[in-house]
Length: 351
Image 1 (spheres, one colour):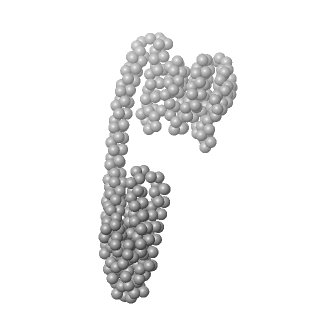
Image 2: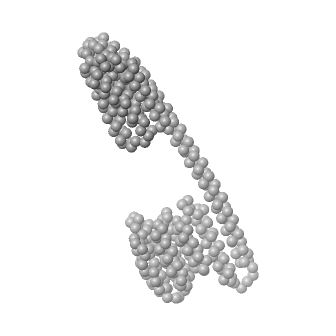
Image 3: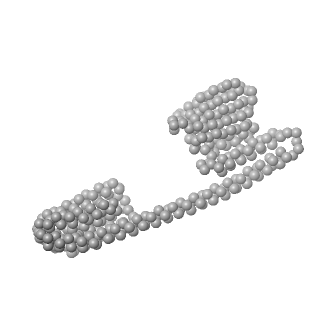
């Protein structure tokens, strides 16, 4: 409940109380006492409902509907018990006071519900006044227009102010979201700029070593080249991918270690991100493969409607590619195939 709606409800509740307990008290007690007491009881119960800090939405609507039915019933009882010729005088309190109470209970509902709550008591009174002739109908209509002329503008004005406040709140939240997005984008840009400078510092000595005349690159230069290439690959993947590295930090670091050791690594990921258990199993597979001389390693991730498939294909340097990892934790499954010096390991994870 917004502050504006709460203020309107308490305001209309106070108006209903003044009419019931002060202006129309004596007139109501002399007429239909049970209906008057039911209206006062509904008015007091409405105060408890309004003072409830955070009632469940469904329960609040049910209680408001029950109080509305009680109020309408009291109004109808007054209308049916008062003679037709006295509708615009003796029964007038029920239409006016209970109308404000119904406005309190229906505040915040749809416009059609609000109009029904305000016009139904008037229709009852007009129907009862028909039997007294045209003069009574005209007098009752004048009274009803005077009552609705106060209730409807207040209800519509409160509704318009509340909608304006809600639009202002949404606009404020949108601006805050834009500012937060700009702040995050600036922070990411600064971080990537810092990392690109670090990558440039790592690549520069590698290029300088390649420029030196030598019969061939030594092991140190080869290792530094692999590390620098892995850093560049990961930086570019984050720079051009809005979702970051789908492999995660652990699997990406594991592939970087393999590439730094001299293995040619190829990666093709067609999924947004990998589940943690699938990444851990893939790390175990890559580490197990890295224990033997491997010339080339390719990791591919392909999603299907029912599962996520991660395959690792490794080509060894002529050694036996025997693979020891044959079990993975549930719900993962593993399948291993060896053809000559090529090892193919497939991990599947249900989605």
